[in-house]
Image (tube, rainbow, N blue to C red; front, side):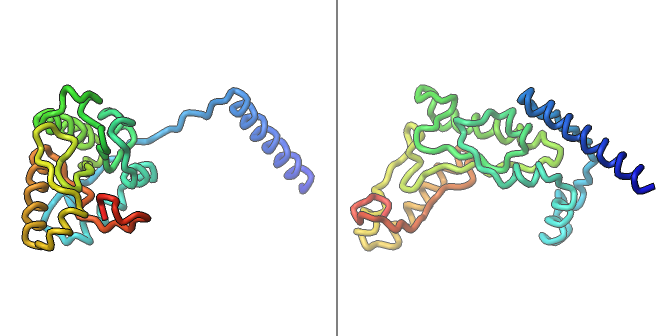
Length: 201
């Protein structure tokens, strides 16, 4: 009986190794099979439950791929709106020079709003309908956008010694950023520079 089990085990091992080697040498992985599960959005999309209950209701329905995708922030130039849906991406960032359509020619506030809205619409098409967080590096003004107000950098604002002025500037930048559909800017920030003359100090 033991000998029979050993032969079956060895035979299965040989088959598994053969299949693995086949895909390795073909330089392809087998296509994953996903089963679309129905989603109950009634709790996490509703407002009648506590935040903890809503979070638990959402997390309990997420696949591993969805959880991984939600933890990623991808630079806009590296991802299309369609890929937001495909990979369940949680956040998109426009770094310096990352304009709508990759072109400085279409770089006004409406162009930005249209671009962010398109990314958002693809996020909402996913199974769970989780919106993205769109981020931009607007530390002293929405500087990627043509026509935005640009203020002195942190080192210059700090030199004024005027806390009220700095707060008013923060509000002005926030309004300009929000008008383009963006939810998150990396400001204010505390820089720990190697050279104190760096602008973000």
